Amino acid sequence: MRVEVRLHATLVAAAPGTRAGEAFPVDLPDDATLATLLDRLAIDPAAVHLVMIDGRAEPDHACPLADGARVALFPPVGGG
Image (cartoon, rainbow, N blue to C red; front, side, top):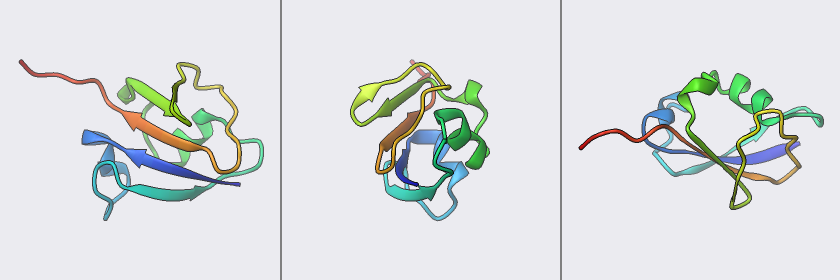
């Protein structure tokens, strides 16, 4: 299956050549979960603060993904 991924802020380092917020496809096995996607992108789950799948927040990294899902990953926000 193929999902569309958007990485934001510091997480964009996991996809060299991609700008923050720019969509790119990722091919995954048919039984993939959010954890599978993070592993494929070599992103530490602790580095992800918010996950949006098809426009809805998803806190469970065991959540199964569907073909064509749109996944956005956001790190914690800091600053002052």
